[in-house]
Amino acid sequence: MRNMANNYSRSDILDMASECITKDRAATHGDMEENFSTIAAYWSIHLGIEVTAADCAIMCAQIKIARLKSNVGHADNWVDLAGYAACGGELVAQRPEKSS
Image 1: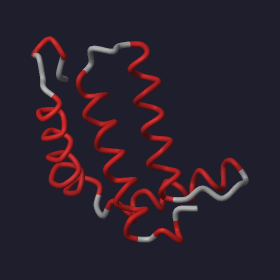
Image 2 (image 1 turned 90 degrees about the vertical axis):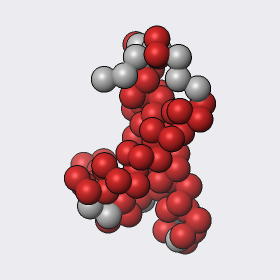
Image 3 (image 1 turned 135 degrees about the vertical axis):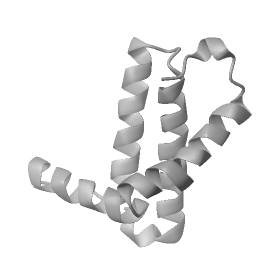
Image 4 (image 1 turned 180 degrees about the vertical axis):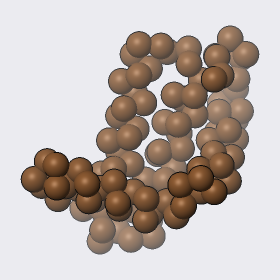
């Protein structure tokens, strides 16, 4: 768990997010689009509406924003927020028809 008391710069946060989404998370959770699509399918069933992989990235980012309200100094939330934004942006750029 990282604390902002370590004085991370914006570059540090983006570098940590990049490390998480390109190496750590991919090795642990598999293909990003497949993982987000699976989560979206479960959410779709639960909510009774269609949820896309891009929606999943957005809602995961919203979770991190909500967590920041409780602890704005917790660096992992900032890192994860940047990571979800990058993943969502990549999903939309690769398959814009699946994001709407």
